[in-house]
Picture: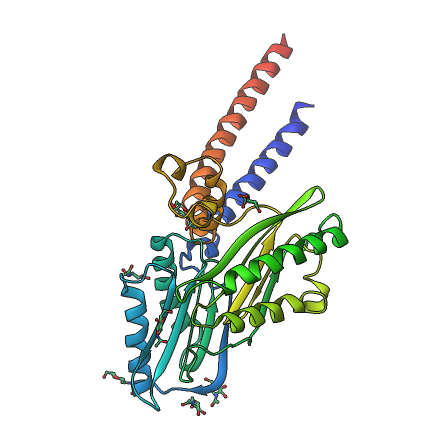
Length: 327
Ligand SMILES: *[C@@H]1O[C@H](CO)[C@@H](O)[C@H](O)[C@H]1NC(C)=O
Ligand SMILES: *[C@@H]1O[C@H](CO)[C@@H](O)[C@H](O)[C@H]1NC(C)=O
Ligand SMILES: *[C@@H]1O[C@H](CO)[C@@H](O)[C@H](O)[C@H]1NC(C)=O
Ligand SMILES: *[C@@H]1O[C@H](CO)[C@@H](O)[C@H](O)[C@H]1NC(C)=O
Ligand SMILES: *[C@@H]1O[C@H](CO)[C@@H](O)[C@H](O)[C@H]1NC(C)=O
Ligand SMILES: *[C@@H]1O[C@H](CO)[C@@H](O)[C@H](O)[C@H]1NC(C)=O
Ligand SMILES: *[C@@H]1O[C@H](CO)[C@@H](O)[C@H](O)[C@H]1NC(C)=O
């Protein structure tokens, strides 16, 4: 009986050890550079290395990355003269803190060159900011292509009820965002849908007029029933993104209420418990990888040590038992 249990235990240990070996040496865990959620390199044309266009683009992107003046989350810059003029827009989600926004925009200026090398026009999307550049004039122009979606696979409990709530909420938010000023066109809100609650944000680039923003959002909203192979309607979390406007909903709060709902919160409310989950979730996309990199090996080593200790203890226990049974 004793003899048969020992090989089983050691094979379990070997299995565990190989599991931790794989965990600790997984190559993807070493890559710390944040990836775009989505990007699109428009194939209208390529610029050549060392061209004027490339120099203009590099200079424009580094201006975006190092800007410390803009604190409203919208960047619109141009560099150079036709035909080498480059125009760029970067937009942070309307509820993110200025330091979070700047670091997101900085990341995006590096990433866009990496994922779209030598492209005349490109568009990259992070969770908290997006960037695009083009040789075309893009300011004050509605651009609904490419339209990108991301959707949770889970369904809401009651699609009819949920869609009614979404429609009500959207109408309110669309009007609110469109009537924003030239620095920000953004709105957040929530609406109860039976036992569930829908939380949503809508946003336009603020270089658009009210009517342009409104119609861009409406076009995006109208996509819901028919688009995306039915992967959007009735889902608990959806993002619909175009260069000029975007829309997102979830069944839990995901935006930073402290910034938008209370424009100038008294110091005591900044760290109120209700604001913490939203703040933590908003930052997740930027820090998740870093947490995985530093925490997983530490936890892995800890579990490994515990396993070895337990293994040694059970062995000693068994030895003791064996010794005892001899008598
Ligand atoms: C932008 O670049 C593409 C490709 O080189 C070219 O076809 C297009 O005419 C350019 N547009 C402008 C406005 O310069
Ligand atoms: C740009 O370059 C890519 C390969 O680097 C090529 O596939 C594509 O056809 C080029 N586009 C144009 C418009 O020349
Ligand atoms: C671009 O310029 C750099 C430095 O001036 C040079 O080393 C490099 O060979 C050039 N590349 C091309 C493709 O012309
Ligand atoms: C932007 O990011 C790069 C690395 O990706 C970093 O070296 C640089 O200091 C950052 N710049 C600013 C202004 O934060
Ligand atoms: C949410 O707001 C708090 C307080 O202003 C801020 O510290 C935090 O960085 C914000 N979260 C994001 C994702 O910007
Ligand atoms: C950039 O945006 C600001 C704020 O919306 C606006 O005042 C300015 O005219 C814009 N610049 C260009 C070049 O469109
Ligand atoms: C939900 O909406 C109500 C009013 O529409 C607002 O008072 C409340 O602060 C919102 N809650 C959140 C978490 O956004």
